[in-house]
Length: 130
Image (cartoon, rainbow, N blue to C red; front, side):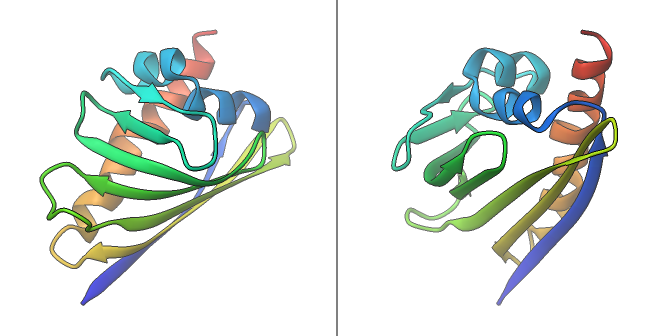
């Protein structure tokens, strides 16, 4: 069995700034607190949080969409979730819609909480401190 995560977040920053924060390894490392190496090409690899998260870019539309096959390093080889992040301008910021499918049941809640702790809260602080 597998679980799914759906989150709808608002952050006061433009879609292009949010996309850059996710896909620029310097910014990603700065706001997430762990070293990152991120390809900006479809098919390219991303390693985040000091190697704890590994991903392969499936579809990238700057300022609009990030789709990755995404996994936690200790998972069995070949075990991935599908991550889809959509960005849409809304008022003075961006509506972020995250859908992560195929999460191991015993990890779904942990992963959902991790998005707030490792991404949304730090991203809000990142853009407030600019």
